[in-house]
Image (cartoon, rainbow, N blue to C red; front, side, top):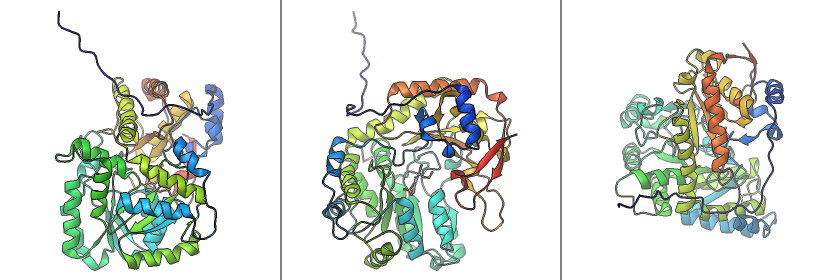
Length: 462
Ligand code: PM9
């Protein structure tokens, strides 16, 4: 008799040493919490959340190696030894000789935007990110989306939806002139597109095009190891290369990069700017003392920099990144069984629900993704985030809502935090909300802050 083939599963490459209790509340209680929070999941109290999938930013579980490093924080005002260790690791893993720490990613975005952008400039990029674009606009620039069209279509299964459309980029260069483009801003993977990667081949081509016109290329490397993982498993010629080697090759095409260390590096706070351009470095090093703190701590404690340095070493371990992306994939496959509309292929850090398809009876200006994130919270205490019209904000020139093609709810996985059982509970909740979707009503925005409105806007039910 032929032997039955036994499936062999993978599991997380760690075990749990410390736990943080969480509690399930009643639906009635959560209805009250949601109303008090103005139907904005950012305004909920964390204590009222059961499974927190708002973000993977600063919410990761540090390893014992990172926690041990916290104890050897050198809290000197100037010249902390943790700073030099972190700098060494930035050189070693990102291949950039110059480095300035910042308290988080947007602080580095602030520095680079102020240094590089003049009023009237254009900054092409592979889809906008909220904080990145805002800093580019505040510096007087206009962001132009040059991502491939496939990125705007949730069901499209292109393996590298983060790719730049070279024709769109060259058309823009010819239209406005290379002098008006201080740099091309590349994210890998692309958060707002669903965590979609850019291919090495596309990166090479973008770099060649930039060289042709003498334009600099800058990298938002916040989740670059996820991008490196997708290159390894999807792009020919990279299957036998390590994540560290792929990351280094990716970075080699850029003049500089910025990182929110709260993601890949698995720390609770931190960021940095790194470059091979000495002039930019000198300006950043000078500006950081104005906005962040001395250039050897940049708004961070010595212990934070030690945890970041150690996080860099862990983030490139293949088993670590495989388990991280694998958890997202597991979740997507479970949701698929219930016919839940999502963005494909599943991304690196999150599952993105397609709210336009989930709630086809709601027009985009009654905020379907915001309403859906809220319903999921009320059903089970699972907290996700709107990534649609609210996040897109208003056009600074016309003052009108921007209407993005993607109207999504993001369910983001903090690294090394939740188990498969948490995912199963979350999947069943979303399936229940999907069953009852026709009863979900839209929202009206009743308070709108000027910048990054998704963080603090308030809504009422229609
Ligand atoms: N990303 C996220 O949840 C946290 C705040 S915005 C909702 O996805 C990229 C690709 C990011 C990012 C933050 C930043 C800014 C830059 N680039 O939050 O300032 O995903 O450390 O980084 C968030 P900081």
